[in-house]
Structures are given as C-alpha cells and as structure tokens.
Image 1 (cartoon, helix red, strand yellow):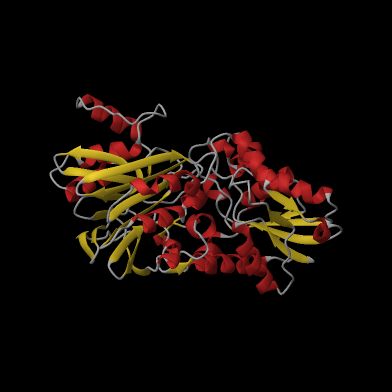
Image 2 (cartoon, rainbow, N blue to C red):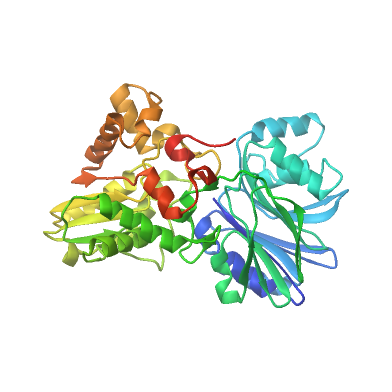
Length: 467
C-alpha cells in the first residue's frame, strides 16, 4: 500500500518528518524517501527498505536536511519523492496510488512528445506521471483535478512547495489523509498514530477528493470534498496501526468488535482463543472478551530480525519470512482445542503452514476464524492483491475447483447465506486441513466499523464499488 507524512513548522521540521515518516513503516517494505525545502532549494533522499529499516537507512543522512517543511513516504512501489521544476514552480511530490490505466496514460504522454526519467524499475513511475498530469494545467488545483479525472483507480498525494504543503485525497477517499496540529506546526499524513509521540492532535479528516493547503499556522480548503466516499474497509481490519483513527473511528476498537462478532456466531466449544501476530491479536482479544474464554498466545512473533512478510515481491521470500518469524508455543497447544483468528485469508498458504505447525505440536482441534470475508475479487484500488493473478486468491481457486472456471456465479459466492458460498468455504477448509473455518460476514464487518455500507469499499468481497 504505502503511506506518507508531510509537515510544515515555524522551526526546523526534520525531526518530526523523520519520525513521522518512520511511523508509517507498517504500510510498506520497498522504498522510503524524504524531501525538504529551504529557500526554494530541495534536498531529497530515497533508499531501498527491502533489506533494512527506514531509521537505519535515513538516520546517517539527517544532518544534510535543513528546512521548515518536508514530505516523506514509505512505498511498496516506486522511488519517491520526485522533485519537479515546471511552469507552476518547483515542487516535490509523493503519492499513494494504484493507477490501473498507467500504460494508457504513459502512451498518451509519450504521444505528446514528453518523456519519463524515473524508470529504474522498467515501468513508469506513478508519482512522475501524476506530476506530469498536474503540470498540464495552469494551477495546482486544476492539475490535481486533471489527475483525478484521468486516472482509473485511486490516488492520494502530498505536494511540497516553497509556500506550503498541498494535500489531496483520492476522489472516493479509499486511502485516508488526516491533518494534525500543534503550536507552530501542521501535518498531513496517512496514519494518525504518528501524531501521538510528536505532540500533534487530530485537527481534521480530509474528505474524498478534497484538497487542502497547509502552512505552519493552519490550513485552508482549495477544493471541497465529494459527496460520495468509499474508504477501504481493510484499513481497519489489517493495514492500520492499532492506535490510528480513520474517519474518527479507532482501528483497535473495530478489531475488538470484529472478533466479538465472530464469537457471537461461533457454536464451537474451544479451550482458548489465539491470534496470528500482529493484526490477528486484537481480533482474538475481542473474541475472547465476548465469549468469556481465555486468550492465549499459541504463536509468538520473533521481531528482532524478521520484518513483516505481506509485501516482499518474491513469493518464496514471503513464505519464508512468514514462517520464520512466528514461533509456536507447545505448552498452550498440545492436546487443546482452540480458535485461531487472523485478519484475513488471501492465498491461504501462509496460514495453512502455521496451522500444520500447530497440529504437529499436538493440537487436537484448530478452528480458524478470519476477521474479513472471503476475498473473491482482486483489489482495484490499493496495491494489495491486484498485483497477483485472480487465481492467487483462495476463494477463486475454490470456485474454479467447483465450477471448472474461476469467474462463475460470483454474486452467489459472495452471498454468505448461499449454498455456493458454503461450498467455497468448505473447499478452502479442506485445502488448509483445519477442523473448521468460519469467515466474518460482511454485514458484521460493516457494523463493526460503524459507517454506512455505501461509504465503505468492499470490492474485494462483493465486487461493488464506484469507479
């Protein structure tokens, strides 16, 4: 996915920028970048995070960063920030985006005799393309509108100018932007959890399609928010840090409610409940509290040398990291029946390996309870499951086994009360070789979040969305 952090202050901003960006490291594993401006001179650095952490890479370079405003990013895709000199002036840009028509827009630009320079990965850099589309117009406001009108997918961005920071949320608000304030400074970022230790308070949640301009004294609206919103529901279930708020709704609290909803529908009698670290833990606590049974850690996470495994580009490395970072605790597992909660099942391979470890340690019964419904559609709006084929999804594999093709009767498979949905879940259960498998219902998830269904993006479950 990725996340960004931008701050502007009446004093030096570099410390806040460094730590604020680092507090977004749970959102990405590939690239990190910082840019600051001082008297219209931009200083930038970009490093790979695939074999190291943000702080390790950037801390030695901090002395060269001097300025009162800056932007930073943790990205799972391209190298950024990009620094641009154009008729609109000099600016730096970072984005969290998924541009499904990037090849079409690249060809459009090349036909206009433009060129791209940031192509180290062999593909068009999305942030450079976004900057190019902005520069087609006579103002930043018109340029950002141009971006949102032309791209298919989603795009939120921060622009750093010598006058201030522009924050623009994607037109349907699938990715969040929250503003924070403290005496003499403002911030715009993806995660409000980055505020707490830096002394910021939540000031404002930027609306879908809204554009705001930040100075050290405050912010002003450049474009009003759109009426429709479809914020990603998976933010609360998996992506978000526990202490973060989206649309004023706390991540950890939603996870407790998700676990409680699973518990209310669960008829199995178990000895205890456990969660897959880290994002499954809060769901398991919610389940435990609701069902009034013990919460125990059947798995513990070894954090000193094994980073998160969700996004490494090599599948073998993802599997290796996922296995090596989790250590089962035989004392709690042997001869026990328990519920194991995780945030979701995407491919199912990692959780399957985890469960078999527990069985080898003597677990009598393992009842798997994902806190998100079965994924039937690939994500079109975040870099989540869309970079992999549809048949990578456990749900689609099961559908193909049942129907002979992976795209038959998808509306029925997305209906939790249909026989076809039950058959799909049974196929996944048998493949994983677990005692039982019960997914979260979509209506329970919506209730746990607390927003109307039409304000949530649930495309990966039921295929519904505004494009």
